[in-house]
Image 1: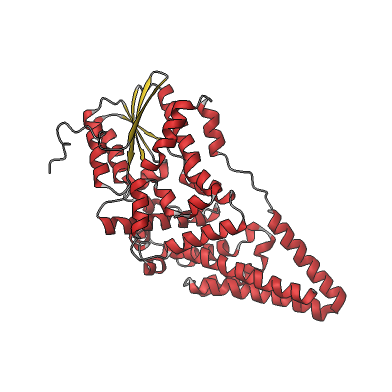
Image 2 (image 1 turned 180 degrees about the vertical axis):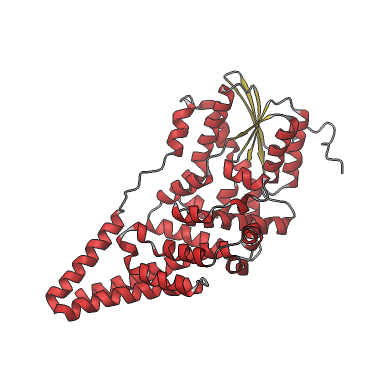
Length: 404
């Protein structure tokens, strides 16, 4: 098969692009569509006909590894993920991967194929490859922490929906991908209607990538081809032309996460409410009322977590662990029922190497999330946490009613 680009086609004239020259460096920004064979061809042509010494791509280490290493998921350390509290983040990334897979099957073009072509092409031609995007985990965390309670709930609901969706991707979503950014499309219209989410997912990354490109120039590059989603082209070009601050502090600022309290305010409020409620109950109604409140709290929250774990297909011991941990979950983050039940599930039903190898394929379907032992641990974490949360609110309302 001949993969040599068409003679005379430089990959730029019919594609959105911008050229920025500053500090002795020429930056060619090529705006691409993440689901377009034309973009793949344009990237290959630009690399073939250009005299670039550096290829920069809108990828971070994690996404680059996922694109170029088919076995990346098989190398996951599940217990480390659970121990470090990254279960939700990994589940979100797998949901985005499942979304990508549905796109690939529907359109016949692997999402991000033009970024993969740029990365592989740089290695083949012996050019320097620079990954200029911010770590996707930091982007998601900054987006999540910038939202209020209802915004977070809406975002989690959207991720949960994509986690379990099997249907084809809508035409409007495909058009967004053709015009712009994968993460923006993944969050749908919520990014446009939520300034904090838009800022973290789009605007901050424009600024971040501009700073990374200036770093690349400072490290010796003189002719850079930057392959980015078309949705970033305008903002990236503006920052690259105008920003004067030293890149390093800018990157530190955009990589920083707000320091979370070891015991969040919500936990403190719930703890005070519960202890105060139980004490008031014992004072006003003796052991009968106080004991009733304590028993209802334990049963309602415990049953909520246990039901969630059971729906996730949890082992009986995982269900028991969820039941015992759920009443304690609001008191301290280390006692989170989702983490407890997920650890027990992973310990009893240890995932095999084959489960890791099949993870990418299995998470592309609803049944696959339950069939694959690795994915089922993540589902266990999510549904147990959800069941516990429902139980906490239900029991809280009951206690308020009794105290009123």
